[in-house]
Amino acid sequence: MSLLKDILYKVAIDTVVGPTNVRVNNIAFDSRQIELNDVFVAISGTVADGHGFIETAVNKGALVIVCEHMPEQRVNGVTYIQVADSKVALAVMASNFYQNPSENLKLVGVTGTNGKTTIATLLYQLFKAAGYKVGLLSTVKILIDNTEYPATHTTPDSLTINSYLSMMNEAGVEFCFMEVSSHGIHQKRTEGLHFVGGVFTNLSHDHLDYHNTFAEYRDVKKTFFDQLPKTAFALVNVDDKNGEVMLQNTKAQKYTYALKNYADYKAQILENQFTGLLLKINDNEVWSRLIGHFNASNLLAIYGVAELLGLEKVETLRLISGLESVSGRFQYVISDSKITAIVDYAHTPDALQNVLETINSIRTKNEDLITVVGCGGNRDKTKRPKMGHIASVLSTKVVFTSDNPRNEDAEVIIEEIEKGVEPINFKKTMSISDRRQAIKTACQLAQANDIILIAGKGHETYQEIKGERFDFNDFEIVKDYLKQLEK
Image (tube, rainbow, N blue to C red):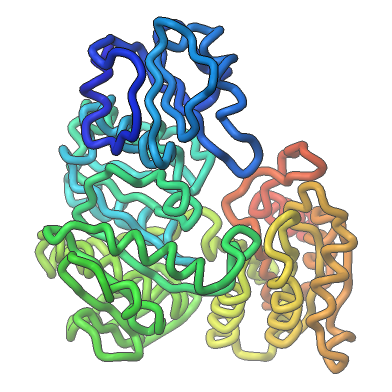
């Protein structure tokens, strides 16, 4: 049990009704999880307002209520604490409850539209290979040294984050690399965490269903860097014009990386093939099994972080050459008939363009590039025609299909994607709403040496339709169809 006044340390409190020298068992923001002598934090969410469940929490045994609006009727024996922002209070309380675990390891946050998972995961790989105990909080998985846990959100809630960080402390983890999403920043899930560094990858069209405008999306990302302490580093990609914006008000030590512009960490691509990249990073050559310009940028960020965390340069380059691609990020298989199938998480216009331009820069143009792509339902609709335009311009053939339609009609989503296709490119495209059938059709269309790109879902092993999740793995499905064609 924890003393309430201890877990309230550094929480900005407006009003307290009741004692704070009581002992509590746990903290929850979901009334269904409340048990005897717990703290219930009432949060105003996008779907439901936790203030409507205060009475339920008290009836289930909550000893403490933390809220933004003090209830008119209060129960004797229950402590009520009014705060300006319940999300911030929850994050700070979560850190205190778990004895501020982020202060006991070197925590680096990676934010941006594209590249977060790749950079965080490859940093985990690199520091593991260097002999350290390492943690990872990512979209794909959560790792505490060698133990894996399933990931449900890019940035988990603050209680979950601190729970995992506490487990990392117990396991002797020294470094942790964490994806930091705009949702996570906006919902204050990273408040109260002690970061030794932050990385900005890039910013492009995404999540405007949530943030309303691009400027709002950018500014939310920027708050992460605004809050870094002066002892931390801020490493940003200045090939993206928003990189300098991230540095404007930060107290952290400022560093930059770029492929095209002057920067502290600079790289030149010497060779770019399906077998990998040959890079010159700050005058040192290194070979990587990763592919494409976007991965050259990712590797440069990784090199910068490793140096800023104290790894020796030559050792870092050696370790980079051994890094393997991340699941669902330019993951490819080549069939016996020399058809190359690539699965990538590219689900934004910028990411799709990067992947297609990378493929086009490597291929000879004597083969077809067949793209299978869709867009998620109940998400930013404005990017749909942009995705359609990019796919139809940069591919030889395109199959528009469903992604995770969620509660929308897949056919309607596809129609909105097709609005971005110029008349000259209509003949390149077809629409098959069944994603499995779309992948099968792409395999049937492909000839020897052709390339198939299946974009949008990457590492995901499900498809979400009408509130249900069905098993669906792009990589396994395309491998199976290619094998069938060989028979």
